[in-house]
Image: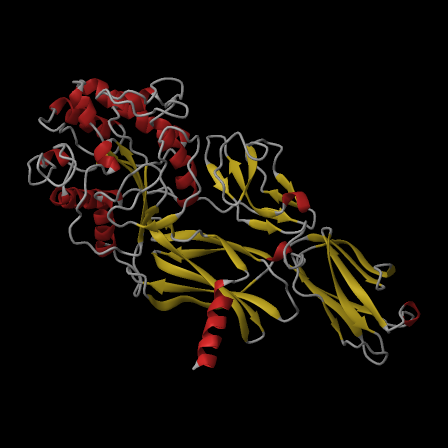
Length: 580
């Protein structure tokens, strides 16, 4: 028994310390599906330990149901092509569903290590508004099953006015009191909505359509504050219409609340895509007696700004909401109706329909006691209305995620894809800050040198002219190079055959280029001194075979061994040649 337990412990330890880093997708990422139920999903990572002849890297994709139970394979084990630094990057058109992506290292038929992440193709929403949208007040959620495929950013900013950019997403299951980053306190109606979308949306057999949320709402905010903060110069989100100081630290709210919404669209929605912004706000404007025309104009300005600053095809679901705890206001709901018409948006939740103690947290209810906020019964009704909203959105085209930017990797540098307005290299998934670490986002910062001064794991953040941010895969540098050795990119293993070589048969060197590159092929001694040049010119993609004779090389080796050296775009690998 002790031997069995020892073997089990060693096996589990081996798996836990996988030498494979999957850097994209991040765990539990959901990519917005198009109206055909598909998304182009990119997969990227790096093998971070030594590589030997006979090794291979493989992946498979397994379907999961809504509770995270694995069912059947979408993709069976398939070989992965490795590039310089033992990195990989490829894409697949993937149908809507909830999946687990596995990567393993094989030595022949022996599995050396394995790792995995969950990801999905489904629906993505960004939330904006005030305290109800934020999820304030609810304490008891009643009975609910937490679906594995209803997820959100579980990080929130305690000072909602201090960050100039959102944090790198860490995603988790939405469950009752869990936060929905970057701003929300808890799941509110969104977990209920997510579950209902999962249960009412057809999915491939053995899988489910996942849902992901980001929440940018801010308590007490008025539509005037959202509108006046668009230019980041006025309308500070400081004292709200209720006289509460919401931004007491950091930059004192300059550019809020719009800044967090815009940055989340530029960042999260660029990475994952989006079905729509869900807007629930109006209570504060009832409190200050705003007129219908002003509300419609200012909300229209907000919708237009997001389409200008992020994507012209961005959809909005605008709720009909004005109940301030004592009355509704037709001026606010008429303004919301006009804004929907003027911006070609759809109805969110008609939450003014639910104002009684049955649905709101009146004094005496176990909650915050503010009759403006919903209880569990009210949240059920609001989520039902949002489900109708979702159904109406399916007739419109969503915004899908962009491609994962490419990296050009050599033995001395990593260069990000060209065409962006500025670049910033960030270590260990740190927060992109737009103007700090390590050198700021600049047009000249596209290349990271591979040396001991840059040891660590790096991603490059790339910014487009409208502010949309792209993020590269992660690459690890260790001891001034790539961990476990360089491994040449762009070619399959260099082969020499027969080996040992022969005077009686033809001897050949063979390799395959995966794309066009400059190739230098030569025979060298054990010190790297060139003995004979074979090729030194530009090659197009393809397989190449070069014959050679072993005659005359024995005098350069005491042990009857020389080497063939293949250099592709400045990156080299060698193979031993045993002389006859």
